[in-house]
Every structure is written in C-alpha cells, then in structure tokens.
Image: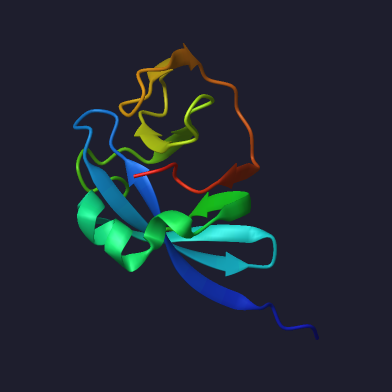
Length: 120
C-alpha cells in the first residue's frame, strides 16, 4: 500500500467583505490540498513569516472541521484573474469583486487552482 506524502503550509487569503487578510492551514494529500483551519493574520506578520511564498496547485477541499473565513465565515473561494489574490466569497455569488485590486467579474467554477494568494 502506497503512503501519501503529507505536508502542511499556510497560504494567504483576503476577506471579500472586510478586506482583511487571513491565513489558511492547508495539508497536501496526494494532489489534493485539504483546508484544515483559518485564522486572522495581518499582512506584516505574514510577510515576515514568508507565507505569501507558499504555492498551492491542485484540488482544494474544505475539511469537515474547517471554520471558513475568520472574518465573515464564508466557506467558498475565488482567485482574482487580475492580481491572483485568493478571496473568500458566499457560495451563491455570481459576480465577485477583488478587495485587493478592484477587479470584478463573473465566477467561473474550477476544481483545480494554481495560487499563491497574491502579493501582500
């Protein structure tokens, strides 16, 4: 039986409603990234820790324990097509606006992402 290599990392995200940054603990399991936890984190601390350099490429799955965005509770996500920022959103949103660069657009669904959370 083949064992899956597991590695954990923190990726950065931004709350669409409050425009505040936060971290997400993601555990890699094969080609999947399981979102385990989210926590409030300011941009200065994130930069100092190097979290903005962490890259996620593959399927993203929220674990059963995942609390969602620590600022608004949203459990869905989008990646800005202009600046690459990873942003929380309500699951029924059709149009989103990036709180970082102001880019606005219609949601296109995907089960694969290649993101770093954008620059801080």
